[in-house]
Structure formats: structure tokens, C-alpha cells
Amino acid sequence: MKIIHLGKFYPPEYGGIETVTFDLVEGLNNQGVKTDVLCSNKGTETKVDLINSGYQVIRAGTLAVINSTSISLKLISELNKCIHQYDAIHIHLPNPMANLAIWLIRPDCKVYLHWHSDIVKQKHMLKLYAPWLRWLIKRADGIVATSQQYADSSKWLSPNMEKVSIIPIGVADRIKNVSSDLVNKIRTEHKNKKIVLSIGRSAAYKGISYLIEACKYTNNDIVVLIGGPGVETFSNLIKKLGLEYKIKILGTIADQQLASYYAACDIFCLPSVYRSEAYGIVQVEAMSFSKPVVSCDISGSGVSWVNEHEKSGLLVPPSDPVALANAINKLCGDDVLRNKMALYARHRFEQELTAEKMVKKTISMYTEKIPALEKNKAAIYGAERIDALFNNEPALSARQIQQKESAN
Image (cartoon, rainbow, N blue to C red; front, side, top):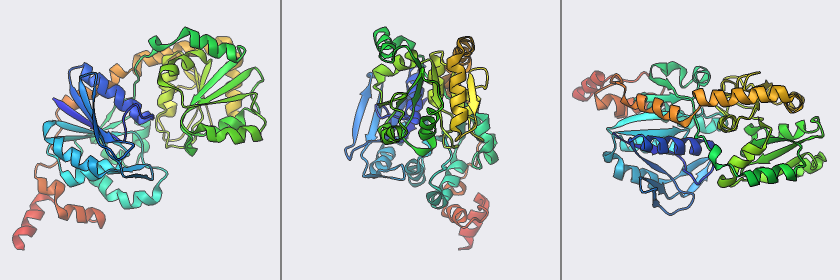
């Protein structure tokens, strides 16, 4: 079996989906499932990297990025050149460019969709994109949802549950990457205050502004460290609120230092407020380091499935700085409770949220027998079917298409 994963980007580019793709691809190759990667490059150049002499990553040149979508004609041509080598393509969504590539190329291999999130923010773009997305779901042989909660709440997934496999995101155990010297340096720098770590991009749905406002109500023996690309933009808000003594902006944390920051903190906070946060991978990373989590109970998201309330951490209502502060104060102020939740967080990680378990379930999805959706290619790819999707008309069956062509 030979698989190609199609994603937006791939490490060293930073992001939750990129992390999942990396851990999955590495794990599949380690299990003997030959797996390569096709993604967009941040620049216009197309290049091929050979990773650990084991698998290749094709980074297709990108013309521009519009509404978080890489515009890469090279991605289409590169897929067309190599797809015949593979038994299946595994597409990480949302990714309209990948959707377009499959629609144009019409590969004969199996197609699996990894549904990381619905398109929530770009509603106007979604109206134009929806017919292609419906077509891709129809074409798919299988769909990965990261939690039952998210699948049930998705208008795209809930009608297609017969195709859905629930495969929670797991992460690699990176405890061995901790530097005790760096951990001691971090804790000494903050004078042994209780450390709250938060990592995320500066996107609005990440709720970082609510965490900053919450620091107006946190105890003075608590310091909040905020890391991630673009978070420097919150420096002005911190100064405006006079909270420089309670908050430190870290910016992007180097990969080789990230494990040490998780190890140094006392609790982790994910303040995301919208369903765009479909899972919260950083929660799992924190739990792998035995850290309790404070996060928001977002309706229809898998965040609250990952962080079990009053077991691995605390859940609070979204967009509520006072509730966020109260939860942080509670965990930081109660050593017994914090240590109890820390043990459960690590146990939950080991039992359900490891990269190994994610890889094993993915291989099972690849190898299980999936009923043929429609053997006649005309019924899957025909122009009549595409027109029907755009016009919200019922799709024609293969037999109806054949009858229509005969009549013409």
C-alpha cells in the first residue's frame, strides 16, 4: 500500500494541521505504510525534500495566499504527475486548492478526507465553494472526523456518517526533548511564580484577547506566557491594560524549546472561543506533559471532549474573561487538585491520544473494505452531475446519464 497525503503546508511550517500531518506521515512510514506528502510551498519555487531518506515531501510553488487558501497551479500539475504511483490520496481539509486538484485530475485511486474543521469564517467564499465540497464528499471513500461531537454538529459530516471514521488526533510523546537547564531557566526567570502557558496563532477565534483581559482578575503570583506566530500584535493591548507584569509575549517558540516550555508551566490554557477550534491539539500536547488544561466549552467542538471537565482540567464558557480567570486561579491555588488533574491528563493521553493510536486507526481505515459508492465513473465525474450540484438539482444516476447520451 502506498499513500500520498495532500495538505496546505508541512513542517517546518507551523500549524495544528501541519503537526497532525507530520505525526501521521511519520507514524505510517514507521509502520511500513509507504507515505509521501504533497503540499504548497511558501514561495514560488517547487522543491522536493527527502525526509530521513525515507519519504519525499513535494512542496509546490505558490502564487499567492487568498482567504487562507494557497493558490498553487503547480500543486495540480505535481499531483497529476505522481498520482498514478499511489493506492490512495489522503486530503487534509479545509483545503479548496486540493479539492480543485481532485476535481480536475479525477484520480482512480481511493480518496480519504481528513476533516479537521468546517469552513466557519469565510462564509461568502463557502457559498461559491460549496458545490465542489459536496462533490468531494460524494467522491470520498472515507472521511476522518477527529471527534464524534464535531461530526455530529457538522452539516457536512452528519448526513454522511456512513463514511465517517472517528479518529482522535494523537501526538508524539516528546518528553525526551525536555532540557532541564531550560526548564530551570524559565522558572527562575519568573521567580517561581505559577506559570500559565498558552500557545496559538493570532487568529480571532483563538481568543487570546480574552485571556489577556482575564489577567486583570488573576492572582499576582501567576504569570501568563503566550507563544505562537503573530502574537506580538497583542503587546499594545497588554500595555493598554497595564498588565506587563502579569503577561509575557514569547512569539513563535522554536521546536527544540517547545517541550521545555510545556514542562516548565504549571497549567495550560486554550482560550479559543469559536467552533473554528475543532479540537485543540495543543491541549493534547500539554496533557502529554502532565499539565492540566483550562479551555472553553465551545458548542459543537471537540475541545471539550479532549479536555474532560474536572478530570483533565476545567472548562469555562467562551468569551468570559472572569470565568477564565477564576479557573486559572483555582488550579494555580490548589496544589492537590492540580496534581490530581495532572496525573489524569497524562493517563488520558496514554490511553487515547497518542500518535501511535491515531496511526493504528488510520491504517485500519485504509485496509477495511469500503462499499463501492458508484462504480460507473460517469456517475461520479460526469458533467451532468456537476451541473446538478451547482443548480441544487438531484444528481443523475449512471443509467440516466447513459440514456440521455443515447437520446442525443
